[in-house]
Length: 300
Image (cartoon, rainbow, N blue to C red; front, side):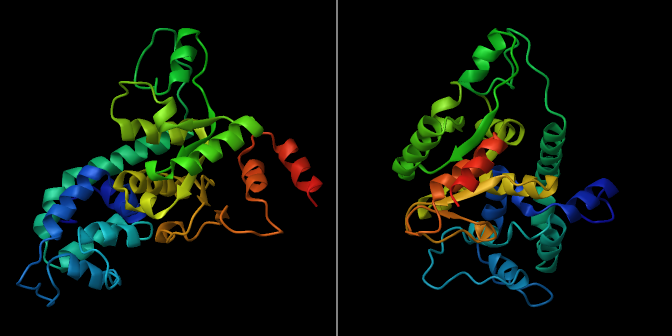
């Protein structure tokens, strides 16, 4: 990917977009090519593998950390603050032009997809006509809306969690839906069977039709590439659109992911007489702003 051969539009996109938008196939290809150690260093005497990227991105994999897939660990550390342009420059500095050329089309495709998602968020799709069973029909609610000529369903929040945290997820669903009458969307419960391109459909659903993304943060959640991809993509989209989108919720002891440390978390595992996390979650997520304000003022 020689900068002189890349169209200006892509150069601009690479400079303004972080590597968090890179999709799983691209990440897997980068891991495959960069995880293996190289003996011969670059002309700058920098290792021509993941170790060189650690040097250039100012990241040190913690001692005692599982060495499996170091590229994935580098992404977790730097993806929210490293642009595609800078990442490519680092690959060139470690003399890995083969990696740059191998992933060029994948990266351009990822950027194109990200821009399409941003565009769809700015210009929501119109209501789907009856029997128009297409890629916009993502949830079971959408089937009913389509059959009755109604607009596609909107949700107060999408709940993203790891299966190991099902008890915490159940508590959130019962509290927000039963007690607070809010409308959540869950992958396991609400996606229609047979939906194509699952992770792309979920991203579209969260971007276009969910006001918030509630994340149950845990060590198990952080270990899942699928969860982290969804989280980082939505985070990048929220930054691009300059709108709040993510609410991290902590129910047990865990190490907070680097990319979520900039957010105010709700801690359900700590006693605090000045903070009711359930009430704060309700006030934030509730679409009824006057009700949320009344609730907040009433607690003073």
